[in-house]
Image 1 (cartoon, helix red, strand yellow):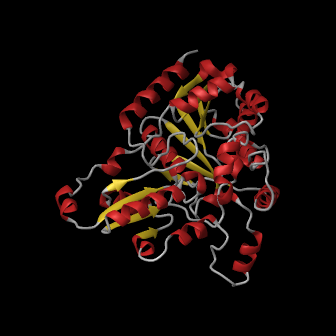
Image 2 (cartoon, one colour; image 1 turned 30 degrees about the vertical axis):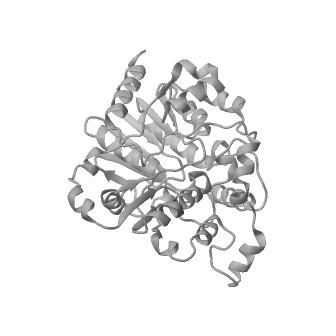
Image 3 (tube, one colour; image 1 turned 45 degrees about the horizontal axis):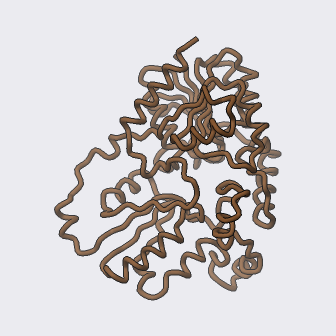
Amino acid sequence: MKIAFVSHPMVGLLPPYHGSMGVQTYTIASALAKSCEVFVYGLEREQRGAKSGIYEGARYRFLPSSPKDRLVFKARDRLSRYVQISSPLSTSDLLYPSFGRQVAIDLEKEQCDIIHIQHCSQYVPIIRAFNPKSKIVLQIHAEWFSQSNLAVIERRLRPVDLLLTVSDYVTRKTQQDIPTIADRCETMYNGINPQEFDREKGYQSASRRAEKRLLYIGGVWPHKGTHVLLDAFRIVAARYPQVRLDTVGHCGLASFPVEECFDLNDQTQLRAVAPFFAKNHLARLKAKLGYGPADQGTYLGFLRAKLAGDLASKVNFHGFLSRRELVDYYYNADVFVFPPVWNEGFGCTPSKRWPPARRSSLRAAERLSKP
């Protein structure tokens, strides 16, 4: 059997530096490559210099982005920092359309039995047009909000043979929003390689350690609730001084746009998170001119301002780390915390649930095997 995975264009795919969606793709592709011919497609500019080739038995093809696509993406990203845009880029036809077309043309040559597309519904029509006989699976990692054009998404989904989501919540929400896909919608949890976590943890030495370590893994962004975590940590640290909080994940100066994280019709939620998405143009200009820290006027700057006095020495922002370093932090932690304030589909960091993931994968395979 020939199977292809089409990555989201903004995702790195190879270890040691790949995020949650990249880890899932790499894990599943490596496992399937033991018995199938597997192809994985990604955008070249997101691969940290990695070249196309065979990794763990799967063939990775990293395709270039066109100058026009890069210009449009950069302009859209810059614009969203200054004005509120209601339409999310994640469901837009402007998200690297040449990548989707290149993938579709290359897949036509390979004649794959199954084509698994990660999250990008906008690539489904062009891939189907070039691959009319392949089974097409679309896997989504979060719900579609009302600001997405559901009528357009529904038309894109018509050629899909199976729609997978990362949780029962997202499955039910999708079936409710787009009833025409309800009978082709299944839950498949994030694929995790259990061998990454097969070493013994030193519980006795950890229990004798005076300092207790709390760990958060995920992007340092408003929708992930890092501000809530720091408020809670302040209370904990006041009562238990010998405590430390490690945050591991991307700490960029720009946050995910609000339209990608929250339903714009939910005014209660929007008012609660509005301060974290404010366009602090003057503060950012001062930072660029050297009249303040680089993170001034950003969400990260807001978080650092919360860490006054001794609290600052107890909280560490480690940024994006390699996979091996990430696993080490899991093993060295006493408590794992995950505080999102949006409707988290099923975060990859707490989802070390290999058995149910495997069962749902088998259900998905059975569905695709039917004529």
